[in-house]
Image 1 (cartoon, rainbow, N blue to C red):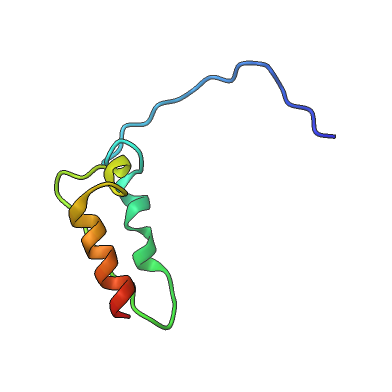
Image 2: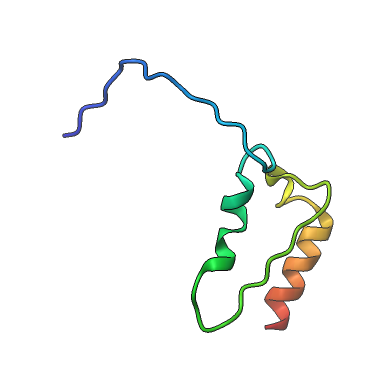
Length: 69
């Protein structure tokens, strides 16, 4: 059985470029993966991390990729 500590740990906030949920350097990190097929990176203006699954432009783009390849 694992014990969970209840003591408070200080939190450090780091300001970085990004959408407020994911730092920019993490969001583009997948472009550095090594695999057989190319990785396509696409950004969407005015869509934050939480809006990706509900934005119509994002959904249309994902549908195009999923049903084309």
